[in-house]
Amino acid sequence: MSSPRQPWPSKTGNNFALVSPAIRIVSGSLGLVFGERLVVFCDRSRVPLAQALVDVAEEFKARSQLVVLEEVTLPSEDKLLDYVLSLLADAQASVLLLGTEHSRPLRQAFVEATEQLRVRHAHMIGLSQRGFVEGFAADASRVADMLQAVGRRLAGARKLSYSTPAGTQLEIGMPTDARWTERGQLIRPGKFSNLPGGQLNALCEAVDGVYVADGSSNVAFAGSGDLRSNPVSFTVVSGVVERVACSNEAVKKDVEAFLGSEEHMNRVGHLVIGANPGVLGPIGEVMVDACAPGLQIVFGFTNRTVTGASWTTQASLALAGSSGDLDVDRAALLRGGRFAL
Picture 1: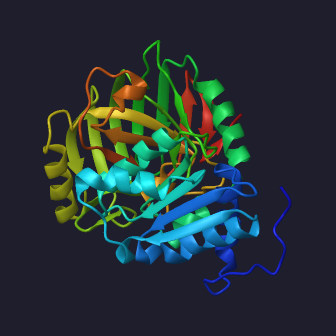
Picture 2: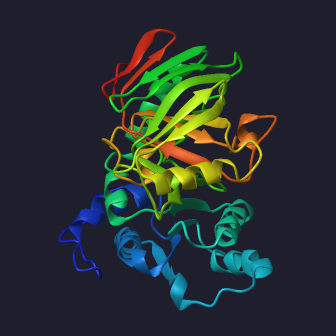
């Protein structure tokens, strides 16, 4: 596909910082081509990001539609799927750009419509402009290559050891049949992907040690999911949280309450190895931070339909921290946040 001509025409005030990530999403991840139709559904605060996607689509001679949440009247929850099916009826690709506070049923309706209509769908929840730019600093093909290279090193691994300058010290045992599933950035028809991509996910057999989340969380504690100023330390014994520590007492209490809100919520649900070479470190947004080279941890949710776990929870606590050193069966895979491949 030829590069778009310059100067770039933008209805968002020529914010050129958004052009490159928009191209990588529209052309790289979604593979939009001449004559196809793209639907972008966003909330009002993310209109500049959505408009950048629409501008790119139009530059590639595709058709596009921008829908702003606050400017439409959504039907009742039981009619949401019909609404989304109608919206995407003749579309080949779609993007959902919403804050984490918005309707989960609406998000689920987009996922179900994607499968029924065989749309290529990008789920982009909770991204700020900074996350939009930094999360897509690398091309989708480069992310895919890194995922494959890291995945080959993890295949069949039985023991992981992870440490960071922030204080993380973990020893992790992996089952013999561990399945590392990729969350990349290349989206096929009838599939959706949470973007940005660049993760490998798997169940673990045993986790012991301390995990320091000094990046971000998918849950807002004391009003924020950004943990860079309020790192939270989790002492884990046999895969279960034994102690939570944080200098901010309000954050500590919120974390403890969340871990006690549901049976199994205090258990390690699955591990995430970030492998997006364009993400250099935590920015305080978990959707981006979880893709940075390093090891992230999820409590509660096991994603059992993919991982085959025997248990799970409705909620999840996804945590990201700064990067460090990762050994796989005593061989170096990550040193100082850089892969040794």
